[in-house]
Length: 358
Ligand SMILES: *Cc1c(COP(=O)(O)O)cnc(C)c1O
Image 1 (cartoon, rainbow, N blue to C red):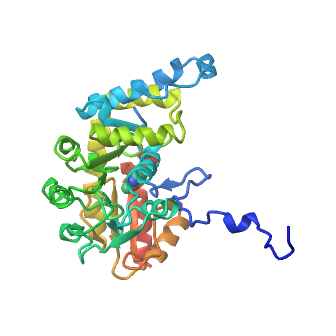
Image 2: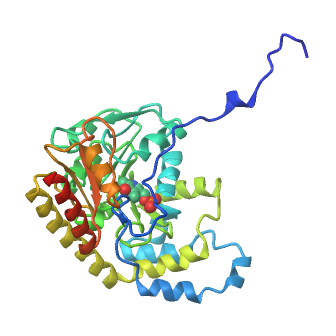
Image 3: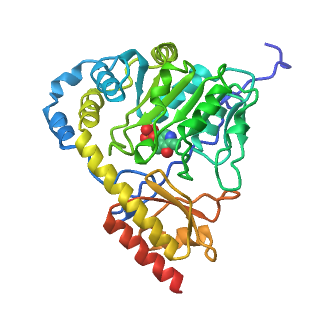
């Protein structure tokens, strides 16, 4: 080796990335946790029965790589065939797989500038060119902005953190203008008041609808998400998954998840309660002078005319109430407040009242 040959160092070849920052999971008890859109109600009792019934000896074996029991329960729930469903470790895993599988064009991936901040992180990680499309003045997605050359489209519906819903007519408009791109609708919050795009998958073979057990199903800790789409889309995602990690879902997720999605009655009861609390909470916040965006999700996005977002966030935290705040243009004065139980919301209003009086 000549002296002139430059010595290489591994540090030059590290994939450096600014990671996604999830909301805090505080270790203290007695925190009113309204910061990560978890469900305030426990999952179905059927889940407990299934988890208790699992034989630890079965953990000796690898799990079913096809997660058939879970896939079949999701397919039945969604009114589609099993080969139109893909499941993963939370919808974050499903979305990451979808990015890897579909977004390999040189044209930019399009998503809203105010949206789920993980999209930009995955685009960086998988080296996908992207463009952030500004929301309009009312924080709405403008469908006409999605009628141009692109390498794919992704947006949440309802959008996060705004909570604002697009109608099926508007989704169709985006799909009709983008027959040659994969369009992903991230329906993490669709159960709280929106109409799902799942029935459109037979009409649009380029549509992938992603849902999660983390919010409306009370299962954030179990980590299950899924995608529904044409056989062709799902087949490609499975090929990528089996080239990456065959055994993503364990028996707790497969059996517990199936029980979780089968208990429709428990699901409806909790969801209806959350929607009712959301509506009452929006009224209360407005009475306190907040402006509140119309939400179809299990959170509210609100700002106060005389109190800054950072200031509100800190005051609430000091009083044991965690909400989400971003130091980001246009939304720096907003708080995203997860809908908790009635009692938790009462605590929030008590603390806000202290601050508004001061
Ligand atoms: C919560 C959330 C997800 C991810 O949820 P998982 O817990 O990984 O299933 C995906 N997209 C949006 C918009 C979310 O808010």
